[in-house]
Amino acid sequence: TEQESHALCTGSSELSLTPVMPQPPPIVLTVATSQTKALAGWVRSMNRFNFVYRILGLGEEFEGWSWRARKYLQALHSLPSNQLVILCDAYDLLARRDSAGLQAAFDQLHADVVAGAEYCHTHN
Image 1 (cartoon, rainbow, N blue to C red):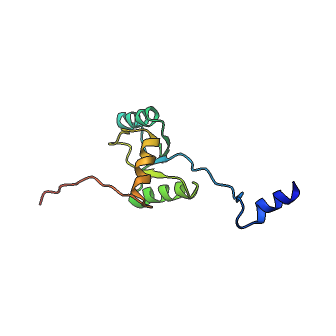
Image 2 (tube, one colour):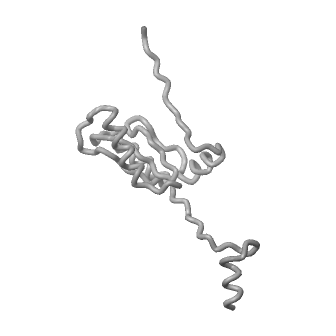
Image 3 (cartoon, rainbow, N blue to C red):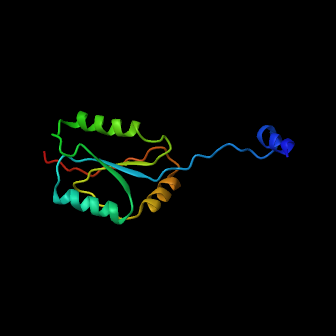
C-alpha cells in the first residue's frame, strides 16, 4: 500500500532501502613498457587465476620512477573507491591464488593498505 511504501522509505525503525553498492572484483595494475617472456608469464598467471588486470605504459619508453608513479595514479583515479587494487611488478611476479582468495585474505587483515616489498641485499 501507499502507507507501507512511505513507512519503508521514511520510518527510522523500518527497513531501509538504501542501495548497497556491490564491491567490484580486485584489479591488478602493473607498469610494463615492453613485451617479454616474463610479462607473457605474468599475463598467463593473471588469466589462469581469473584476475582483472591492466598493463600501463606498454609500448612506451620508461621515463623513471616518477613517471611510473604517475601512471599508477592516473589509473587509480579512474577506479571505484571501494575496489581492491593491487600494484605489482609484472616482470618477476606470478599469481598463486585466485582473485576471490586474495580478496578474502585482504578482508581478514582489516586494513586500508597493505604493502610488501622484496628484500634487496646490497654489498658494501
